Image (cartoon, rainbow, N blue to C red; front, side, top):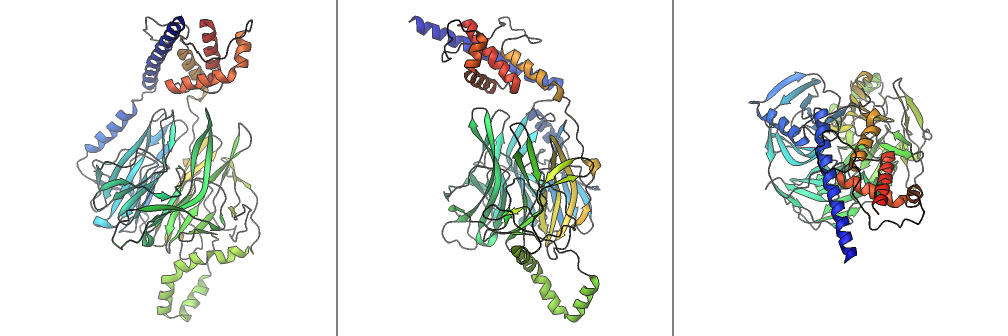
Length: 604
């Protein structure tokens, strides 16, 4: 009976301490936001929405190129020679900015127009956008994320929007049963359906990666979670996705995820597998598939080396073009080397076969004129109709023989601003993981190495905008813009050159105070002093006991005891930090563990 009462007393002590810690954490969060001049994240989003609702009409104005940003969407207009850019984020190293800007790029005039509409979606990044021909042209947007300026608050969306391109009006679709809030997912259109796969959710305390599949029916405006048979891809985000409309087939490749190795230890996983989502049984031309199946795709040819952040755009002839990416190499326990790429690949979507793309360079104009005279107009017209698919289909003929020499080793990219390791320009490996040879002409201009560039294809031309380049802890946002004619595959055309002056990075104001902040958090968790604390029953020591703690040996000092049982106290400290949202780590976590140990010993 006495033992039971003692345990009940200890339980009440733990409960009391947790309540006080929660109260202090809430006070601290409010105080920190007030000091930063920052409102809570839901209020920030509500302010953006209220501002947009106050607009009475659509405003369209000619403007210069968008300010630097990344993780926006770039989509080809389904009816006009235009590209549509929406949203995005920009991190200066000190502040995070989120956008809900809507831009239209007129390809023929090389002009940008900014459109502001009533009731448009709130700012976001890492969303997905798909354009469709129906209803005079539509742009569908799902999900994404929002962050406060200090990145101390995050919010993931699960909303679905459609932009009616005829009148530039946004409409929010209220349909239950859709995917949970997420970003980093991927979305494509198949048979009058929007297919959403994967993504992740992170609330700073915990994270989750998804491998579920949802379909939004464009006729009934309803969501359905697909119960898919077969070999389901593992959870991931940042993968690439492409559809083969004629076959109602969806291809998923690569991606990234994190998994817990043990408590407080995560491991990043870069995926290199490929899957196909296909309907089960026969389907009629106008019928929406009901049953689906995942199958593993056996990849052939010269596939990219292991990387994430690679981008994809669907090209004519059920093929896709991929560019760039990054691979993080662990040099030791504390340092990591990021290898960026600027090589390009062709993927045959039906076969899962890879090819490296080698640009040919411009042909002599005199030779072209002579060729035109020799050939009749009808022959030239017929040739033009086939040239895109022929060029893409024949890309591999030169590369497969490897006659143009071996891939160069890693090099250092130095533009006077920063240095970074760049992977081999061929960057490809065979099925055994060995480097392969490339026919790429190294003298031709290529956009600089990067991850997550925005890519889309319009009228047989590939357009690529921006991306991210990292130099150590610096995340540099690119704002350059290029095009590549897939009919010719001769050379990249520069629409907006890379401007180093726009690649701004500011050291965080709080970086020097991180240790002090963590120490303050830890002191509060352990019952230390806190400004403006009006708790009358506050104690100076932590009121916690641990019934399952290893026994303290007779004559053993607290210091020796802690070192002997360090793993136990580190585990408890991490649990306590996670539960209370303290966010302490490193040396501060060790200090919290020591104080927990001392507090427990003093109460034993």
